[in-house]
Length: 427
Image (cartoon, rainbow, N blue to C red):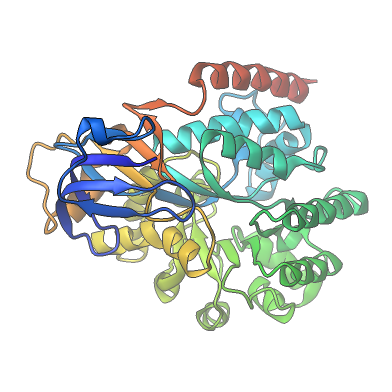
């Protein structure tokens, strides 16, 4: 089965070079794209082949999300917390830790399906997710993976382990993480943040990641409280503690946020192979501050932290905030937007091959060229321009409609599970 893109204007995601012509897209995790001079005649096409008219369309590589929390998908419009939070730790205690404790496997499935729907329709073909559900741990990662597979979304998952719910939940988190990796699925070993992770759990998480040749995915210094607690309990700052534990040794490791770092920690991270995920909208929403990532910019990618599933939106937010904090320019934010793709490729993860493509119906009032594309990227393009999406060579969104599943059924299921979740929160 081959998918042909007729008269497509293809933008190379790394060089931003433009080329117009016919593309042949091969299916599968190892499939690629090739230019063809002439499209096959109608009688030469197999029944599975398909030709898409891409005249006046821009085509480029699929987007990737470097840090998501799909477990928050059913929180939109949820009841107010019983106590108004006044700082970051209270936000966790009164909002997000109440939500994740209330989740069951059905709610998790609904969260994954609706997140996959939104990701794909926004042009996101790969998601790196950090999941938490301390009272529905066993089977949670496979539940998310199956939902993503069904929708056609590639993924790299982990379970967010911590000590905040006791020894039994810690043991279950370790067991779930190992079972998932042992099954052959690609994934991370997940941890919440230093202030909820004891030394034994940290040591076991590092050992587990090494055993399965993967990295950690952990929140780092999102709020100053993380540093304060780490100094009180361990006599070290967060990055120093993780370095001593061997948690910074792998290029597959992702550190989310990294806002409240001192110069010594920044120097450590400059020498470590780890990657950093920035989620500026979440940071602003939680009023925790904004990071200055200039010394680490070669390995900083963008995420959403569960705020939404729109990476073009994340890029614009990071650009607008980053101008004042980092002096970032349009080329810099585009590079950061594409760092998640580079992270996946440099570490050999499957699912982000050349046959992941976004077709944009970008009806710009001005000319779009290689010379001015960055201006269009920052100030013009948005998720509304995503018309069709190809994931691993398969057309999964066409004319803004998800093809792999029934959108209406996903939303009905999500709303049913959302009501159940809200009832539990009110109970």
